[in-house]
Length: 268
Image (tube, rainbow, N blue to C red; front, side, top):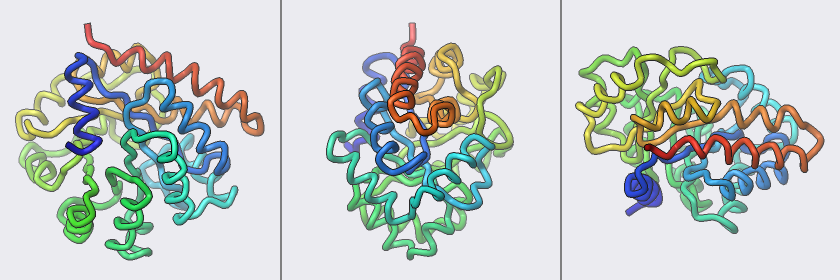
């Protein structure tokens, strides 16, 4: 079993969803980012989704755009993201998934990028702007180096396309519950139970996580009743934004918020 498979199997055995936390690598600086990742993992996060900072993050709302900008301005580079993963591996074996854009993969060379990611300790790669039909080179590199692929299904994805996406996915399917970009919302999308059932009927063998717009314990609980995993991002990134320049306060806020959110994954 891969680390991702182990996490989802353990969550199923415990009658809960896996909790997936998104933060931007290097936000607001390298050392604080490592400490944030440790705090997340120490307070119940199952899978760490690391946003690779990019100058044009088209799938991200303002919160995560500004996080990427802070990371880049602090000196974060594509190479340093691998260093950050290696630092995390010094204290945790939890699965790490890159949330990235294809230009960053392509610029380094696809095989070289995936090889470097695996050597650092990355378990999966989600390339936001790479459709499965164009992902042959990336999928081959991931197979070669033992890295899982993650692809997105949107509310607008036709039924016949879901099976095609599932066929090239080895880690988990990521259902984007809302059209548009990332960001905290007052309510989760109303049709999640139906969407999850529709996707599962066409991709029964893959775990499915739901993200975008989830930011409270009640929302986590609502989604966890149906999905294999729940992704929270902007609500955690806001803990960094709200306490810039005060590392202790950032870590305290991350710890409190994470513990509260993780409490929502248990099913009754």
